Amino acid sequence: DAGVIQSPRHEVTEMGQEVTLRCKPISGHDYLFWYRQTMMRGLELLIYFNNNVPIDDSGMPEDRFSAKMPNASFSTLKIQPSEPRDSAVYFCASSPRDRARELFFGEGSRLTVL
Amino acid sequence: QKEVEQNSGPLSVPEGAIASLNCTYSDRGSQSFFWYRQYSGKSPELIMFIYSNGDKEDGRFTAQLNKASQYVSLLIRDSQPSDSATYLCAVRDKLIFGTGTRLQVFP
Image (tube, rainbow over all chains, first blue to last red; front, top):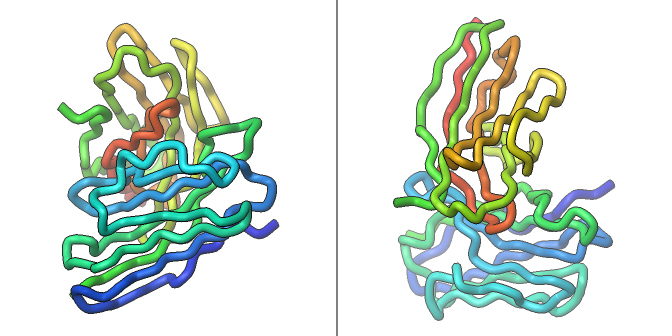
């Protein structure tokens, strides 16, 4: 079975550029989560969706960050404009309805903003 | 105070020993907890979860929960070098993770 698929795996960009990270959850999973991981702050929940609807976006750091889930098989996390402090590994995770909150993580997207 | 606290380590144990990883949480209303393992450069993977006071065993792993003390632990018996990783404690109902404890098992 295919797991959670994220792209790109690595992104290097310059400050001020727009960054779009993509995620395909496991088929049949009703929940999708975006996390950010840094050495200093660990794994931080940014936002999560249930059946494509955003449920809690209180972890989104500021208006430069936005996330969408147009259908059950695709989600994006966009940063515009990017800043060096956004450098981190961004993980997407999904979970099934009957085991909600048991997270299955993608491989992550490592973002470096110069 | 952080909601979930873990000693960052590294915790170094010899092969075959018991590794004990600890986690405290601040919200007394938290109900259930995950333990995830994360190898360097990889994504976290679920080891086990626990929601009742006491012990829960799965193979070489035992999770322990004490809600009165707001304390969760993970014991790894017969530690192997392949267990060397960062172990993340998480409050399941809040989806909040600790920063993890790095475990090193040396031959």
